[in-house]
Length: 209
Image 1 (tube, one colour):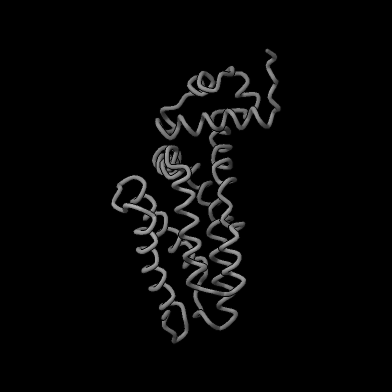
Image 2 (cartoon, rainbow, N blue to C red):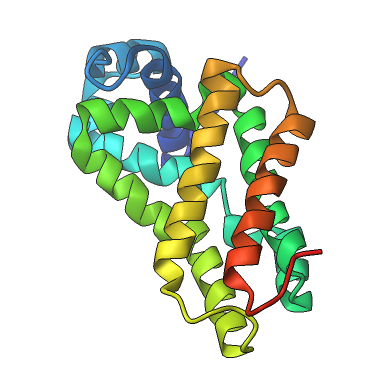
C-alpha cells in the first residue's frame, strides 16, 4: 500500500476538523496543541508550521466554521429577496440557520460561540464580525432595499438585523442545548410569530396578513 501525501490545504482542513471536534467537547481553554496533534495524527511542529500559533489556529477555526455557512448564497433567500416577499425572506433565513445547526448537531458551532464568549472574547468579536459580513449583512441589505421601496419605515437596518439575528441565535441555543424546542416545525412556528411581529412593526401602515 502507498500513502498519499496530503496537500497543504487538505492538511489544514484535517487539522481544523480535529480542532472543531475537540473544542466543541472541551472548550478552547481545555484543548491543547498536543491534544490537537495527537488527535489529527500530526506533529505539534506541523501545526505551528501551518498556523503559526494556538491563537492563530483558533482564528482559522472561526473562518473555517462560517465558510460552510454561506447565508448570502442560500438560493431560497435569494429567490424571496428578488421577489420582495418579506415574510418568506425572513422565514428562509430562519430555516437556513436551523438546518445548518442540525447538520452540525454533534459539533454545534453554537457551542464554540458560547465557549469563545466565555474563554476567548477576541474570538467572539471575530465571530460577530464574520457573522455581520455574511448573515447579518443579508438582513441589512434587504431591509435597506425595502426602506428605499417605501414599504418599511425609516429605521436603522443594522439595529433591526442585529436584533433579529440575536433572536434566531437564542432560539437555536434553546433548540440545540436546552431542548425546549422539540423540532424544526416548532422552531419555525415560533420564528414565524416573531417574523409577523417584526413585519407589523416595519411596514408602513400595513398588516402582515
